[in-house]
Amino acid sequence: MAREIAPTDVPEKARNGAFLLDVREPDEWAEGHIEGATLIPLGQLAARANELPTDREIVCICRSGARSARAQEAIDRSGHFAATYNMAGGMLRWVQRGLPVKTGA
Image (cartoon, rainbow, N blue to C red; front, side, top):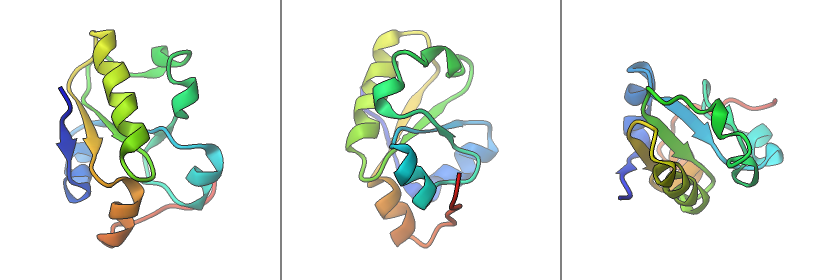
């Protein structure tokens, strides 16, 4: 079941130990990402699933919310992870809300 989280609620989730999973491409990541997030492009997610924690909530992030929704579905289908969330509106909405962005690799 898809669960969305507002960008403004993500910092608190992160403070409480949630794993921030950014599924965009490296060039998008370099343009701006959430500090503390981990980059695993959507196309690499299946091969790198062992890098995901099984004991922490996961917040999936992309540019607009579409790829992260697909990532969330894939993680949920795997069946052995804690709760997952899709950040509604992606980084576009994060930036619109004036939340902090880290640039570079």
